[in-house]
Length: 235
Picture: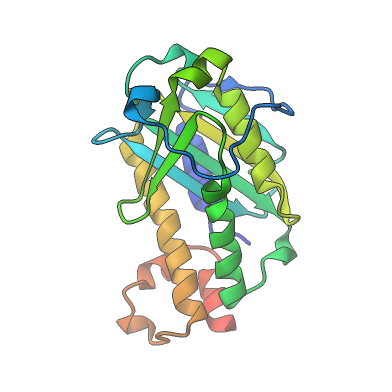
């Protein structure tokens, strides 16, 4: 499945322009609440990606083992213990699956969305993920007590990779966290929107909503994305 590969390659090229730190993936014993837990403003240290600050969350799927050869966790910017004020934020997950596990049509669309929805089932203590699907925004509220206990992206990242790999189809996850203030979030967000357009086009094709390409407002995506026309006309 090559539908997202050009988008992933472009994002990886952007990410490689910045100094980054590889974080060891560990079998963490950090507690998980098991459900969404509110961190009150009086209990928080700061927020990531809140209000007008960039707040980006994205999960993109590939079958290409060159793009995602193995599990990895990468940080661009400061780690959680080194922050003391509200900061821009991005979480980017490139998820590699077996080529033949996603299916086609509605099955393919559902499989992609289910992997994206991993973030709704991810509850590290002191790390409250806040998602606004309508705004396309992901932010985080970080608790004071958790920071004192040693919360860092090593814990949250390792736990998120484990959450993805509960799905047998997932073979490797390349996870990035970004907190750098002068990162090019605008270009990153454009790539994330492009990935979402591809996903919407898969849904459009699976529902057989409109087969007249000349009248379809998603024609540009089909024209540009490798494998999309094959998916369309194969159906």
